[in-house]
Image (cartoon, rainbow, N blue to C red; front, side, top):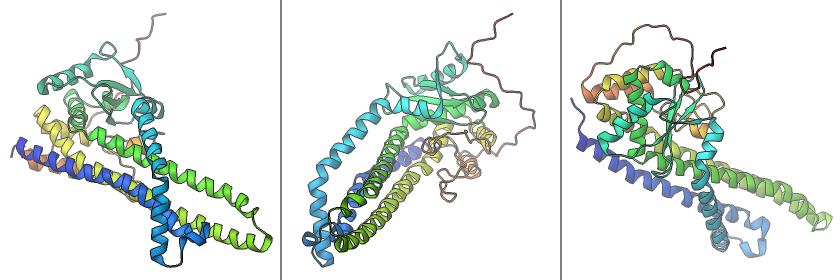
Length: 351
């Protein structure tokens, strides 16, 4: 059974709608976290204004949050502005990737160029991570800064048609705007994590300042209340951060199936995509790569907190390609891997 372009487009369109709704969860989640913080801590921080009933607590928390909402908006806009202009450099610093040109390594550029010409797309840039792991990811927020990053291991270990399938997979993420959505989700999760740490540190360092403003008997009560405030705030921030992470997982899992299907549509070779996934399986972990970026890769076998998988299992992805295309699952021939080399580096100079 051949892939249906109409059916694939419908899946992509539906996924965009769901993704947009999920992205809306982030600012709403941030607002709710601040609202709950002021609601549950109002009795300790400002008992005369917070009232006594649950309804009073909620009203106090909501009104206090609204009075600070402009700071939240400015904080969010500032965070996004920095991320928009510097996310490429941040990713490069975190992964150790190095930009390469067509002159450095024409093979991958020729593969990407053929794929882009077939769809009338501008060429993304290439970057290489000097790692024996086998992985790849796409990044960028606009056509000016889209890039595809490959590891040294995946360039050297895969056959040409398999490597082309991997590049097509990452190009599909760019075509489907998955890259933009995932980077926005990374920005939001990082912002919520930073906000949580900032509030926690403020509360820890603020306890001594608060206690000095009261007499000894009243100070003990205030210290007890400060401890309750800190525990409540910490619980709210942890729950909010976990929800933000889980929302990211919902964004990423189904997209890998769609990117696999898109790669097959671009290359017209389901066998190549399946063989590439089989070779990558078990060899994807890049040493010292941050989890946020590892979750953007074509494969991530490392589970968040040991429980939550960011990617569907490779065997299910292979089975999905086989079922959709009517292509039997291939068997990889046994072969010895040659020692690593660096095709993008300058050749050794003769002595």
